[in-house]
Amino acid sequence: MKNFLPILLLILISCLQKREKFVNSDNILVAPDAAAIYKFIGEIETPDGYARTPVAKNSFAEWLRTLPLKKDKRVFLYNGSLKPNQSAQFAVVDIPIGNKDLQQCADAVMRLRAEYLYLNKKPIAFMDYSGKWYNWNGEGNRMMFENYMLNVFGWCGSASLDRQLNPVTHFSTIKAGDVLVRGGFPGHAITVVDIATNNNGQKVYLLAQGYQPAQDIHVLNNPMDASLSPWYAVDTATLIITPEWRFSRENLKTW
Image 1: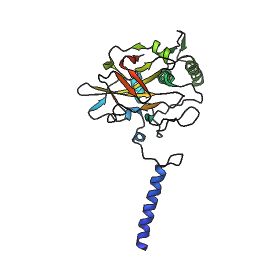
Image 2: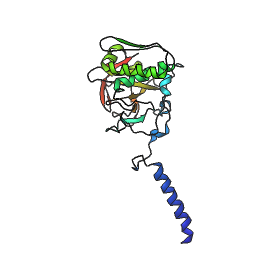
Image 3: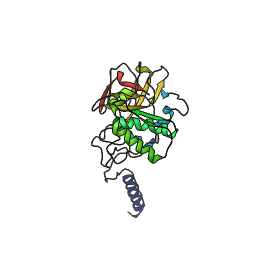
Image 4: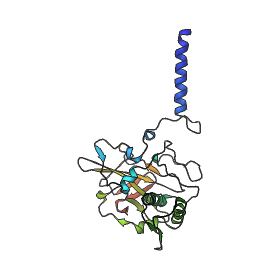
């Protein structure tokens, strides 16, 4: 019996370590998540036979691939509570959402675009539904920029974003940085954050959204094709069905 004590002790320690590794903050035992191995959007594995499409250096598309991902896959609301639906996301983008119910769906699209322009000291402009423009000249500190964004979130939304963006004539030309948007009250908007292509020229893409109420921006699962998820195929389907909204191919727009 004494000979088995060291072995039993090792097994017990091993089990405790595994439990500690897979217990979340609510003390619930959870399975390890594959998304936790990815640190950035550009690290999310592409489907077999696909490779990421080359993009221009310092472009918006290249920047989107550098977006950091949280180790915790759960989506939190602006008030710190968990989003009721935790099945929509593949991974969560590590970008603050503030403590106000302002950075919602279209706002998340504008946040990503504005962050890229702000970091590159480029002018920023968003239009509200009445046609008034909210401009940032590329200068100023972070606090001033955040105040500008809060003003944008307060006056701009999916309806104005739909009017501001340019239609994409052929869905097959989809690229990172494009936006699926249905303007309305409410409407919805989602950012295309990456593209991959195979040797036959077929494309797949990743989508990231914010939602209502304001919540963490997250990379979406694909409810249409679990074997391809989180990637979406560029095919002839009329509808793009995401976990919480449906779009048509005609809803694709670009900056």
